[in-house]
Image (cartoon, rainbow, N blue to C red; front, side):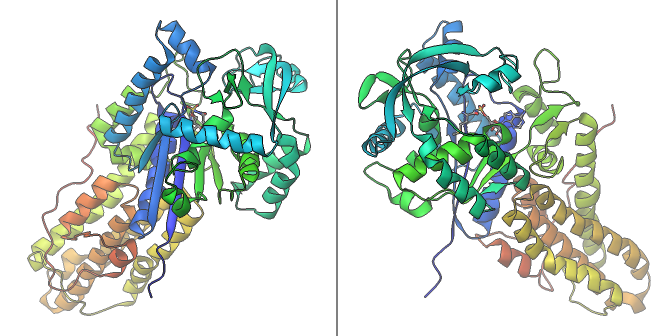
Length: 516
Ligand code: MSP
């Protein structure tokens, strides 16, 4: 009997729809998209979730400033998010909105379970509140940051009100033990240490309701309060799968998540609050929470007033001029995944030129030579030489190194490894000099081998680039006459272009940038 198909479940944070998406949101989403595409191509039953986090005071305030209701605001901006993900060819399988009935119903059930476990109680709270982050901060923390948000720098607000609490403290020892015993749970390692040391400083129970707010999910045991807000938001990862609904088949199939991909500023919520909630619900924890770094622009924090903000229009302009795939490549290429990143036009140009000069050029010259010297037909291997061995082994091992890079979410490597093969192929072509071999009829068998090896290598480069450059890699493969036909990445890498295979016309994949 065939093995049961492996499943893979990956999520992005659900974004606040109080403003249009920008570079940060596009980054997380495209990174998750690349990983999802890889796992799909590997033949796994893949589920990729994104969505929007629509409750909370931020939405209320933004709506009020525009003289509209929160629902009108989120309906408008959520549409922008959905359209943008379509425009950027994001392959998400679902889009969860926290203002949707399916989410609200399931969250109500979740809260009932937490209440039934005696994990929610009524108390009263007075403290400093960070509205941007939607969390209370301790007196010490507030003082240390001069009563400003450590993240946004905006002044903290003083709140006093009756509120329901979630018994976070009760679960802290279990959470801590889990993190210690499962080194893969929080990645990269440095982030794991941050969480562990913050845990050791002590944790208070979590305020989870507001009596002063209407925009949110009413608490089932006390509808005068709305849920506020991390239980609501974090639950999206299971409500989207149908948890606590009539049909939990997707939940049974995909939970626990394989990866929650998030930005570093929301790591604490995902690795302390979320596990505690899941423990209370008696559910398994996600296998991994991976926190990536933050983008700055031109060496400074992105800011609308600073003129360095990489907004949607800017991203669109880049995609129109250089292709969406070039943007995808740059985002992955810019820094090791997990580190902070800095957007500069010069770096973008460098990364684009790498695609053009290494991958585009390798494909183009290989197709041209096979067209000119062999009528566009892949020749059979003829005479071999020592020089071939290195390229052959690099061509064959790419699949393994790529699998390991995706396994560890080394996304920069996922982008670079295929490029390295194209670079080696260019070196091989330079060293074997097919143009001179072609002049000597006695070297015809040697030329056969060189052309064959170069073609197999660029074919594997393009296959390995499919998750990173979905359009361009597919276009390049089409030029080589390769049909993807639902084959897995392993099949595509392993199946050589057979002798006699007809390749197509060469077209530059990455046209040169006009120097202006
Ligand atoms: N709604 C919460 C998340 C709830 S998840 C259960 C939230 N939303 S957000 O709209 O502020 O999006 C935050 C996410 O956007 C970050 O985690 C990160 O993925 C991305 N980014 C926003 N700005 C960013 C940068 N400047 N750089 C990189 N990514 C950042 O937080």
